[in-house]
Amino acid sequence: MSNKKFYDYFMCLAKIENGKCDRSSVFSMLESLSVKLLVAQEKHCIENSIHFHIYSRTENQLSVEDIISMVERELNLNCQIYFSECRSTRNCIRYATKEDFDCMFKNIDSKDFHLNYHIYYWALENEKFSILDGFVQKNFFFADYIESKHAEFRSTLRSVPFYKINVKKQFGNWRDLVIRWYNSFISKGIIKPLYLYGDSNVGKTQFIFSIFGCIAQNWFIPAKCNRDYAFSEWDSSKYNIVYIDHVNFDDFRQEDFKQIISGKMFSIKRKFMSSKFCVISSPIILVGNDEPQDKFKEYFYIVKAEYTNVIYANLEDYLVYDSTERFYL
Image 1 (cartoon, helix red, strand yellow):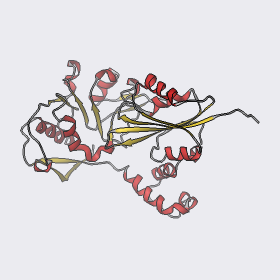
Image 2 (tube, helix red, strand yellow):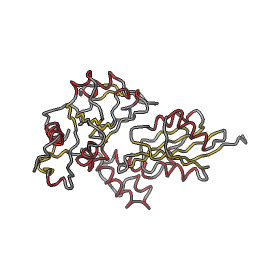
Image 3 (cartoon, helix red, strand yellow):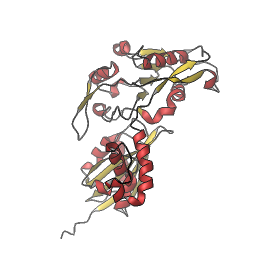
Image 4 (tube, helix red, strand yellow):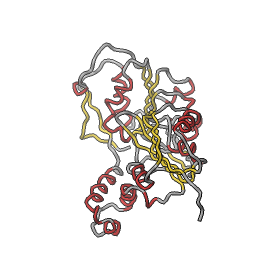
C-alpha cells in the first residue's frame, strides 16, 4: 500500500464582480496541481457578486500566499481569499455542492455531493413528486425536504414571463426611451439589444436594476475573464436576460459577438465539453460610459443617459406592471 502523503485544502474566492471570472477559469488554474478538484459557484444577486468554493487534494503543500499569487497572475483578480486545510473532505464537498449543480470536478464521485444536487437532477427527470418513487424511498427520512426542493427546482424550469410596463407618468428624459425599448422588444417590435450609455453618475445601472431587479436570478452576465468562453455557461432554460455592464467590446470575440447581438446562431465554446450552437432571443442590455464603436452601432437601440437633478423616490408613481399582458420569449 502506498504511503504517499496528500494534502487536502478548502478555499473560497469571495466577492468577485459577476462576469469577471467563471468556474472553468478557476478550475484551469488549479487542475495541474490537484489530484482531486472541485470548483463550485455561489451567486449573491443582491451584491452582484459571486463566490467560488474549492476543494483540492494536492501532492505538494500549498499556502495562502501561493493561492493569492496564482489568482492575481492567472485570473487577474483582486478578491477576498479564504484558505484552510480540509479536516473533513466529505463535509467540504457537500457544502460546496449545496447550491451549484453545474460544478466542475475531477476524480471525485458525485455520490458524495450534497443531497440538493441529487434532488435537482432527479427533479429534472420527474415532473411530479411521488412518495413511492425509488429515490424518495431510498432517502425516506428526508421525504418532506425532497418534496419541498422538488417543487422549488421544478418551478425554475418554467419560463419567466415578461410583463408589459404601463406608463402612468412620463419621466421626460432617457428613462422613457428605455421603457419604450422594453415594451417594444417583448412584443416583437424593436428586437435590437439596448445600449445605454452616459456618464457614470447619471443612474443608468440603478434604473436598470429598479426595472428588472425582481428577476435578477434569471440574468446571464457573460464572464469577461476569457473572451473565448464568455458565453460558455449560457443556458436558455435558466436565463431570460443578458446583462453586460462596463462594456468593453474587446472582452468578446468580435465575430461571435456580432452574431449574438444580431440574433443569429453562434457557437458556444465550453471548456472540457463539446461546443454547442444556439441563438439568444432574450433581451440583451449593455451599459457603458461611452457610445458604441461605429462598427457595432447598427446592431443596437442606442440611448444616451444624461444627468437630471430629480430624485425618483417611488417608481410606482410613474410605472406599473400589467399582469394581464405577459410575454414569453
